[in-house]
Length: 241
Image 1: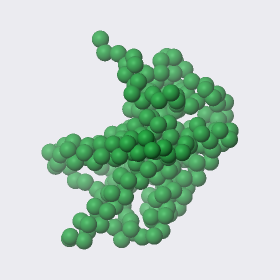
Image 2: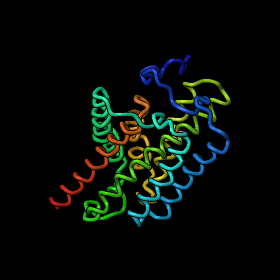
Image 3: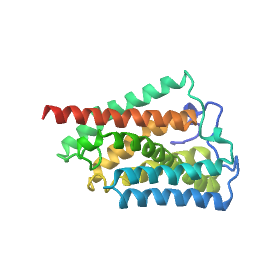
């Protein structure tokens, strides 16, 4: 019989995820702030999809402020210094994403004759503008906290019911990737299979980087590498055409 028991040992480095098991304990008000943050990000993505700078700043602010608040000055719960051994996780996560998109996601969508949308809804000239490049650094940090907040919220709810960390983590991963993918629905013109395969399931690689190191800086760097590699490819393709 299939069991999740000890299936996630490869993620453990002596540091567990914060909050889900009341270590440290968050109040009901704190959890409400985290939930409201998630809702505000999704609303922001939907309402301001065509206002890149405003959207990026808002996503950053409505996630980073709650993140800092619930840490209660123990910022090491989310933020740690990048260590030399973290580089391996960063590189493997980035390469894993590239291989997944090239060898699995894109061929599946091609077999389905499914039209692909590019990097959001902005023309390539705007994607490479100084304003976009600056604001995207803010947005991607906010997107990382969106996934992390979703993961912790779901883990907390399931762990309260089951007391089982592995089941809580598994459901948290699936739920956070699904919601994160669906948050891109408007930006990618409702291309449901693309956002579930690439923006949703594809985000497992930078989520893995966070889960492995319990350090948002690690997953953030992976996310930056993934998105900027996409911008570069788009620029090259635009130049060719």
